[in-house]
Amino acid sequence: MKVVEIPQYGIDNLRVVERDTPQPGPGQVLVKMAAASLNYRDLVTVLGAFGAMYKLPLVPLSDACGEVVAVGPGVTRVKTGDRVASMFFQRWLAGELTREGQASAIGGSLDGVWRDYALLSADGVSKVPSYLSDAEVATLSCAALTAWRSLMVEGGLKAGETVVVQGTGGVSIFALQFAKAAGAEVIITSSSDEKLARAKALGADHLVNYKQTPDWSKAVREITDGRGADHVVEVGGAGTLEHSLKSIRVGGHVSVVGVLSGHVKDLQIGMVMSANAKVKGITVGSREQFEAMCRAMTLHKIKPVIDKTFPFAAAKEALTTMMGQGHFGKIAIDLAA
Image (cartoon, rainbow, N blue to C red; front, top):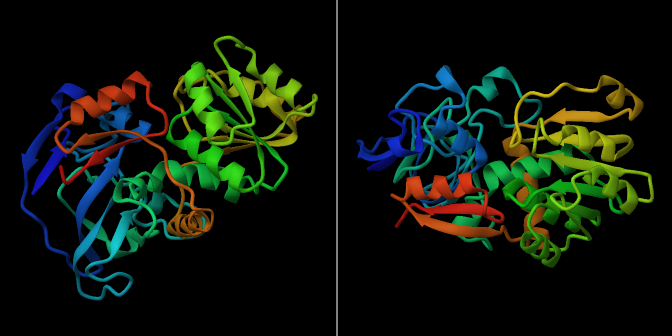
C-alpha cells in the first residue's frame, strides 16, 4: 500500500512510500481509504512543533473516510462494506477525556490516515451519514467535532444566544453552521472582506474585519448593546484571547481550540474573575459526541465547506496551501487519486 510519511520534520521532507498492507487482528478493522482532510494540527506536526513527542517516521492526518474491507475476530460494531470515519482518538469512546484516551490520537501518537489502507480499532471508527460525500465525511472527525463539542457539549448553546467565531478555517465555519442550526446569532471575524461575504452567505449575522477594526471586542460589545457575547470559539490563542475575554458577557463561555497566533500570553486573571468567565480547553471530542453530531447534521442536512481538494501524492502542495491561510473551510485529500 502507499503511505505519505514524515521521515524528518519539514514539509519538503514528506515522501510517498510503499508498505505492506496489514491484516486486522482481534478488535481491529482494515479500512480502504477514500478521502482525508487537513487540520492545522497536521501542519504543525509536519513542521515539528511537537518536538520529540512523536516517533518518526510518522504517517500524518487524523480525519478520513473509507470502506471497511476486513474485520478481525470479535468485531461486531461494523462489518465489511460499511462506510466509516476514523475517530481522532481511537480510545476516547464516551465520558471525560483520560490520559489513555489522549495517547490514542492518530496522526500523532499513532500513525495517521494518509494511506491507501488503514488498520484501526473497531471502536475507533464510526458509521457516517449517507447524504455526505467521502470528502465531506473526511472533514468531520477533528474540525467539526471540535466546533460541536465547544458549542453544544461544553457551551450548552441555546437558541437566541450570541456566538463569536474567529476566522474562516474549518473549525470556525463548522461553528458558524452549528450555531445557526441551533438558532443562535453569529458574529464572525476575518481579515478578508471576500471571506466575510462568503460567511454571510452561510448565515453569519454580523461581519467584523479585524484588520480594519483591530479592537474587535469593542465591535462585539456594540453589536450586543454592551452585554457581550454568550460564546466565543477561540482559535487564535495568545494573540486573541484577551479580546475574547473582553467580548463575552458576565458568565460567558470561551472555548480555547487553537493557537494560530501563538501559545504563550500573560493572562489577566482579574479579567477572568470579573467576567466570571468560563474558559474551557477543547481537544476534539469522543466517539459518542461524534455520533450525536452526525445525527444533528443529518437532521439539518448541514454540508461541510470544502475549499480545495488535492490528490494523494500532493502532500507538499496541500500543506503549503494550509500554511498560506488563504483557504475558506476545509482542505481535502482524494486518497483514491
